[in-house]
Image (cartoon, rainbow, N blue to C red; front, side):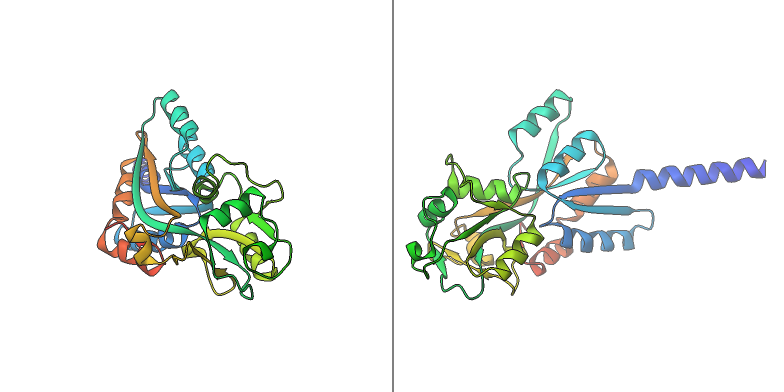
Length: 265
C-alpha cells in the first residue's frame, strides 16, 4: 500500500510539472528579456518551468500550431497563411503585443554614411542602386545583406522598404548573428536588424534623417517599426496564458525598457 501511495504521489507530481511547463519559441528579439522574465516567474512559482528557444517568427508559429510549443514569439504581423492554417485546424490565435522595436539599417563603423532616405533604401534593396557613390559615399560596390525570409524582421523590412517591389537577387541572406558579424567585418556591407540587436560592432543609419530611439519609436516618427508579440492559441494551457500576462507587469515592462525595447505600458 505504501508503494502504491508513493507511485501515486510521483505520478501526481509529474502531471503537475507537465501542466506548469511552458515552452516558448520564436523571434530572437524577445529571447533575452523573456529569459529574465522567466527567471523571475520561476523564482515566484516553484512548480513552473519555462523553456525558451530562439528561432524566427514563422518557425515559432508553426510550432504553436503543431503543438510543440505553447507560446510563439513573433515580430510583426501574423502571416495570412498562418491565420488560415489555424482556422482550418479549428484554432483561434490570440495575440498579445508586449513591446515595440525599430528595424534599422546598419553599416560598417567606418562607413561615412549616417542617414539614408526611404527612397534610397528602396533603390538599394531593389537593386537599382549598387554603389556607395550613388548615395554620397565612397565609390565601391555595396554588399547587400538580408535576414532569412522566415524572419519576422525580414518581413517587416520588406513591407516597409520594398512594398510590392522585388528584392535584388544579389542580396545575401544570413541569420542575425552572421549578418551582424559580416557587416562588422565588411566596410562596404549594408544590412538591417532590430534596434535592440545593435551594438558597437556596427553603425546604425538614420532613415529620412530620423534616428531610431525610444522617443522616435513611441511617437511613431521613425518610419520602420514593428510590434513584438506573444501568440497563444485557443488550445494553449492556463500556465501559458499566465506567463503571457506576466509580460505586462510593471517589472517585466521595465525589463523590456532596460533591454532596449519600447514597453507597451
